[in-house]
Length: 376
Image (cartoon, rainbow, N blue to C red; front, top):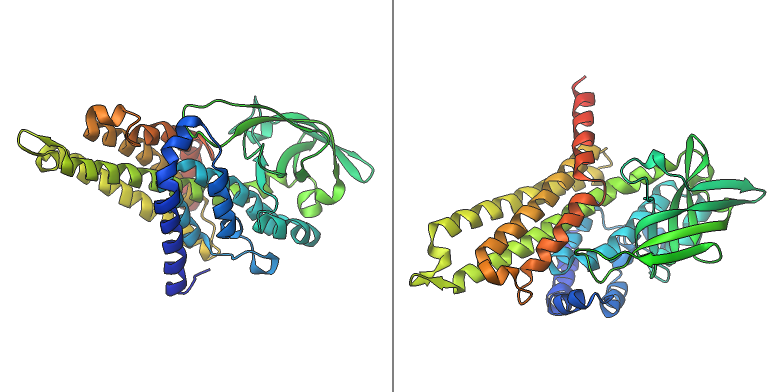
């Protein structure tokens, strides 16, 4: 979907102003305290950001993948964690929009679009991450319900979210996806401490005899869960790529600003050729990552399959985030290692992007297999 240019510009200008005025000034203090950004999340709710990929018929704005990516770039430029609060929520909106039954869409999309309730994606387990077929969580049919048992790890939004999309085995060889509301049988057992990505909870979740109505089996069919969640993961890879672009852009902007005021040997370090070469390489990588991400998003907007392009964008943009944040630290020298400047935060946040949304090693396999298939 393409929005009129004026409307797109207004939406992006609104998000940019929010990031500049509210996110950037608060990010470092909240991050170092590992404090949940409750006030920022409320502002994001008021701006309608939790419904940007939900159809208008269900109370969303359905902005399309390209604008969606541009919004995530802006948010991650301010602070990766606020983008994370939104990202997981929108993945489950995507899954329900594309694969939910008419009843599921009617019951859940309006409350997700308004953020009256927020979402979390429960796929990964202690012994199953990239290999989702290895999950052990089970869903056993019991009359008009399913009974879920198992544990999930690394679940973003687990404490502040209300609705989970859970992948479980309905028999040893079939994976199914369920919409599970918090309540009896769902226990958030612990918060996982992390190198970066602070301020947003990442949790272990236990399902013990959790009874779920059969009407909450996504799509109303057993055995299609992996296909259903992969649709959401394709969108997630675009938003993770966009986050990589935003983080790398923030690091580049800090390096450019610093290089023009820091002086050595009688002149700004920006006038030293070695620094200029670093800045040029950083900027080129950021722009290349942005173009790959928007190319993948444009294919999704046209309704075309974009697993190859989304994988390429996720791989390149997240590696770029890691490389550019380290180069920014080099430009700032000792100040880059100090918590007085945000570059050390960028450097600690970047590795999550390489691991999350499917590790970059998995992305390389996805890319290679798609290339080989297309060449046949």
